[in-house]
Image (tube, rainbow, N blue to C red; front, side):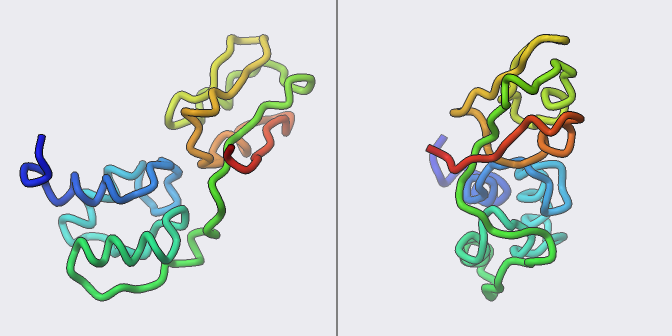
Length: 139
């Protein structure tokens, strides 16, 4: 597929950070990109993309650049989740919360994060009932 055959939503989706965090108010980057392409959402809704991401999206849409909406969350450096193995009870709630299937493990067994797949979305952290997930800078 060449860039000429990409839809506007495809191009916008490629510009988004793919954290799938939902801070934009949509169920992931693709639905947000589709809403922007339809003119139903602005470029300022992505904290992981920060101000630079909002500028790139504005350029692609040929609209005025605006800073990202800080009420949706803070722009942070890339991060990954790490399970503190000694504290994990194997409840599987983190697995269910992960939008990119980066956490593996079985019920009542310790879980682990596949770091190259983790987007740092933080959705697993509040899901954990024993607070055994830490966020660390991405390697």
